[in-house]
Length: 174
Image (tube, rainbow, N blue to C red):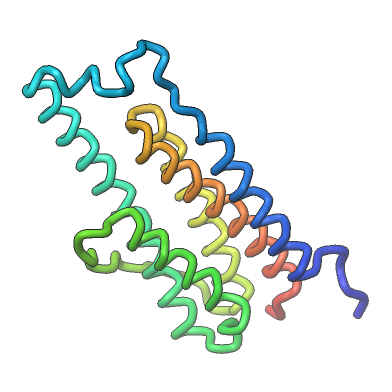
């Protein structure tokens, strides 16, 4: 069987490039009002409101990531043959979870999978990664600076994971 044009080395390089692009895109300060980004903290009520909003955004992103991590855990338990390919991606999702929720480790979500073959499980994970990337991107509209940068980076990683999983599903025996 002839190998496809996508190699693991190439896929990892693409992942790194996507992540670097997301980080560099979020490097601007965005402080056009000359206040150094502290205009919202002058009013304590407004500051408390923004803290609650950020906490709600983090909770939503954490829930999405915990569910995604549970999906990886389920796929690895159900299809041990996929461990070599899925373990690095699962570890990256675990790092995302830690970054989004640094103060406490949230409980993992529940994974509901109908996949009976390794290829189907990988396809489900690819779809879950795409959905997670879309969810993080939607949260970007409401997120303050640092959280927006983190969400952009995690969304880019999820998009790269979805691509890698889609390619892996093509190579995985049914």
